[in-house]
Image: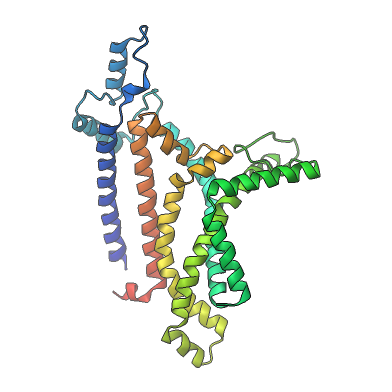
Length: 327
């Protein structure tokens, strides 16, 4: 088992290096940090700008292979991911935005996964009944509705609720707002600002995961080993939990690994809608701002999260699938 996991870890490390290197060459040739300056301004010192870009190792006049080697040495030896054209440290930007994304995504993805798996498994055991059809219809409506629409509708409902009750129960702009002086005020304030973004993200997760889980459960419920367990006298709930659900979770684990990793940079709409400045918005602004080092850092972070998710999926597969442990 440990040799299997170690082999997978080495494979992911090599793939991560290749992916990040390709991202650097792509960003280094496609993005032009010099375009962020207005060279039509007669007061702009062109030589000073070029000298600054050279010092930051983002001058397009320098061969991309030479820039890559300097950048790679700084990352490997000093964990220095470079600077933006505005001379801001990419390390400092990431250290702030990563935790913003973690705070935004963690609860929403957790609720989405647990809710989706539970709902999908439950509806599979009630196939074609009224409850199954109603939940399937609601899930399809949520899946078909863009995130920006769900978030906007929630904001409108929250505003109407606040106006009707004369309170500020729902607050949804930014991470924090006006903090009261009572005990635990800061925690409550953060929870208020986190509520609507969490609902926005978890609704889509519950709807999507429940559809996958339902179909996987239907496949396993008809397998011989489940019917044999039932024929031996095992209760339906125990047969579903111990045999059908456990088998159906194996492919879902791999799916979760890709989805959760993608949420860090894929939650751009939610971040924009609720004014959270996380990795999603930074992935867009770094490209718009011709920020080579920032773009590569975002790709590296996203790839690292993907491979970490895959590693966790492999561990989960080893735990739930005895065939992998034996082999």
